[in-house]
Amino acid sequence: MPERFEDLAYILHKRAYKESSYIIELFTREQGVVSVIAKGAKSHKSKFYLNLQLFNHLDVAYSGKSDLMTLVQADIKKVAGIAGQKNIFCGYYVNELLLRLLHKHDQHPHLFDHYDQLLMSLTNNLQPEPFLRDFEKNLLNEIGYGADFSCTADGLALKDNLFYIVSPGEGIIAAAPGQRSDFLVQGKTLIDFEAGDYSNENTLSETKKLMRRILQHYLGNKPLKSRDLFAKTSGN
Image (cartoon, rainbow, N blue to C red):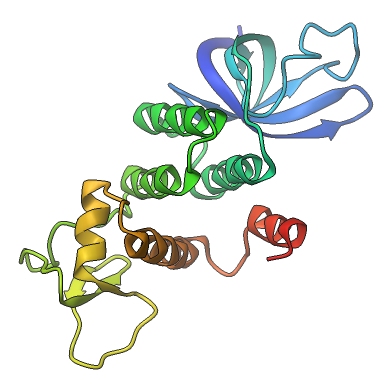
């Protein structure tokens, strides 16, 4: 008998499969990223037809024994309400990060909850940047690449007025006078980042640049499609 799973889920990506079905990448609370086939879901008569939209919060059930499971239930728990081009692209960006950085079937219930909170902030049309930075930080922590932004790699407290290099995999190192690096950041920025305080515009700007470079280090040379798409659409 195929094993059956029931879980909370969001759709990270879906693509057409044959004439009437979809292959869907789910982000589930208890099983992580799971690939499922939604048979016949393109049909207006399908019980899935209206429910399988990005950012809908779903109660799902799926079964099977292979890497591609069969979706058997997808009931809406909460309808997606993200409005505005920028917020929608932020959602695309986060979905792509999860697909690129998470291993399938790795459990990340806390990250799932952070994702749910992020979508809520996008739905409420709040300034997305602080929520994105916190989510990126939590994502790296969850997959074992996180840094302790409260002190140096040697355990020394950071100082507001000094500069530091955030080295992926090695932690925070005090910068030598005049030293240059793509990962060079002011101490105050790191202290604010650790505290989740983005009231300073410089903190918001510097953490965005820093996280982009750290994430790129782990993503490799393949660019994020969502970032390129947003740049082309917005003209940036």
